[in-house]
Structures are given as structure tokens and as C-alpha cells.
Length: 121
Length: 121
Length: 121
Length: 121
Picture (tube, each protein chain N blue to C red):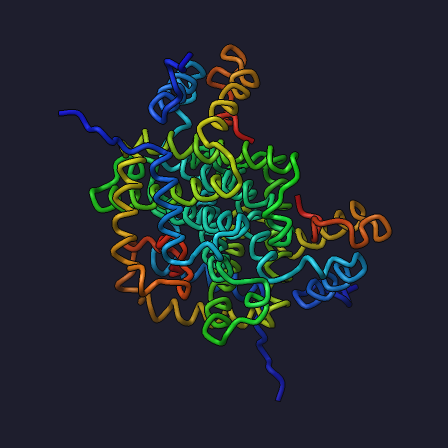
């Protein structure tokens, strides 16, 4: 049997709206506050890696992996909530940015020598 | 005519893999480095809002709005790249976290008085 | 009676060296790791303010104030540790940057209308 | 000849007050905004290191070193400005935190095996 209701970005955005509305938390969800919360969650994710060697960081143990999954979820949730409040479609924005990055970092020039990695400044 | 190939999270993840591979940038994309880059992008997004009043932040002008869209894209791209490297499904992780948040912040107890906003710690 | 040994930046830097050395923690204190830890501490400080209104943020209650003092201390400690590892004198660097900012933002041009606040980019 | 007016933390705090006052920037320097700016500067400092190997990060070239000094200065300036606005003495706070860390991480227990590095949570 196929999954008739797969989870999508849109589903999650709607659930986040309902979650905030039911708790009367919209008052706290200003773009400025959400942008702050997003950075805090990104820092919590980063904290998992900060004292690890590159090798350890590439091979998290199960507890660290689960912790990383939860922090990744938090980053995504705040990112979607902020985008929703600003009226920005994250997938459209991502596609546009990838096109821009492809122009900015042509394959031949960027090969191996460049360190911007995704082209983000 | 319907769009036969809508953009999905999976599409973007695959394009990011190709983008890095073509440029020989996989060597820089360790989980530790990607987690750092993610925080830096979140901070760049936050920077747009830092000197704005809450009112100004809720009504970005077109240039600020475009800037926010690009930084939101950067956050998403690094988040997907990091998740891919860690073998974490971001949508699954988000759904699990929302279920956890719903248990942690029951509607009646959380209503209006709580400030964690999405339940993330 | 005067305090014969007032605390200075130099005193703290030396104590941090001893603290790390005694615990064999120098191995973790690479500049890259310390820079990561510094951002994490700054984010923890920021987290205190994220759901507060500007008014609430300007009038922390005693528990929040104590929490802020501890996070401010953490930021300073990592900043001094990182600077020490890089051979950078933080006070000299601050004085140079203030001179640069004064040139970049002349009083008459910057007055009230500019929002970079300390001139930092 | 000795330097009759060495730079101190107090000198810098006073200069920052004057700098903001002359430019009518106090209106932007709320604790919430300054905390945001501090994190942004810490992220800019971190960005210098993000694609470097641990070895490269420990041996910055002159341009990177100068860049790091400027970002370190920015972090210190915002930290001092924020502390001033909150009425927190950064050196006192640092000394208290170091005392707390020394109790929390006794030498024998922490030796080599612990990764919190400065004891900050």
C-alpha cells in the first residue's frame, strides 16, 4: 500500500501554523525573533561537532546522530516558520540560488581550488 | 499543463551532490565544516534584522526581502547538504520533532504564556 | 586598602592557559574549535533575549541578569583564549578597529541615520 | 618613557559610549540588538576558519591573521557595549565564571578526557 499522504514542506508549514495558533504563540513569532531562534538552533547543531576531530565528526555515535537529527529538525522548523511569515517559498528560493551559484562558480574555474563550497557568501 | 517535474527536497539534495562533485568540493564538505557554514549563513540572515525595529522587520522593503530569500536559500542548502552527509532525512526528523513538541507543550498549558515558540530547546 | 592585584585581561589569559594545561585540554583548543565555541556561547547569550520584547530585554529580571553575566563571561573567556592562540592582542585590535570605525563613520554623516551601530561589517 | 595612558577595558567602554552618543546611535543599541550583533560578529570570525583544515587554521596567512584581528575586535566591542548597557562588569563576570569552572571540572577528573574545554555549557 502506498502512502497516500506523504509529508511535504507544505504539510509541515501548515502544521507549524496550527501549532503556534493553538498555543497563542504567534505573538512571539515575529520575523526578527524567528531569525534569532534559527541562529540559536544552528549553533546548537554546531555545538555537537565543536570538540570533535574531523574524523569523529564524520562518524557520530548513535546518541550524537540522534541529537544531530533533532537539531537539524529545529533548524528546518524555524526556517520554514520564518519563510512562511515573510512570504518566501524556500524551494523556489533554493532553486534560484543554485542557478546563481552555478553561474558564479563555473566548473572549470572552481575545481578543487575554491573553498566557498556551496557558493554562499 | 501541469509541471511534470516539480522541485522537491530530493531533487535539491541530488543537485547539491552533483554541484560539489563536479567542482571537487566534497573534500571541504565534512559535517563539521558544513555545520559551521550553516551557522554562518543563519547569522547572515539574522543580520538583515538586527538593527530593525520589530515593525520594520515585519515589513521588509523589496531589496531586504530579496536578500532574506537568498540567505534563507543558503541556510536550506547547507542544511540539506549536512543532512545528506549525515544520512538524516530532514522531513522525517522534522515530523518526529513536531510530535515531540506537541507532547512537551500541551495546548492548555502552553497557551500564550510560554515563550519557547516551537518547543525547541 | 587598595587592591594590590587587580584582575586584568592579562591575568585572565594566563589563568586560562593554566586551566587548559592542567586538564590537558590544549589538544581541543585549536583556533578552529575555539572559534566555533565562541559562536556557540554568543548564541547562548542571544537566546536569553530572543522571545523578549525590546522593553523586557532592556529590563532583565535578576535570574536573567545573572544568566546574561555568565554567558558574557563565557564569550570573553573563549575570545581571550582564541586571541591568545592566534597571538592577537585584543585591546590593541579593539583600539585599531575603533580608529577605523571613526574614519568610516564620520559624526556628521552617520548621525542618527546609520544603523551599523559600531561600524562593524 | 612609559605609556602614561595605557588602554584599558574601561577606556574602551567610555569611547564606545562617546562614539554611539555622537552619532545618535544609542537608539539602535538595545541589549537585544547588541546581542544579535555580537553573534553575527562571532560568526564572521568563525567564517575565516570554516573551510580550513585544522592545520591551516592554526597557521593563518598574514591577510587571514589581520582579518581575524578585526573580527576579534568587533566581538570585543559589541561584548563591551552590551555589558555596559546591562550594567555587567565583564572582568568580574569572567573571574566568577572561572572559579565556577574550576569547581565543576576538577583537574584529576577532567584530565584529557573531557571536551568542554573551558567548562562553558
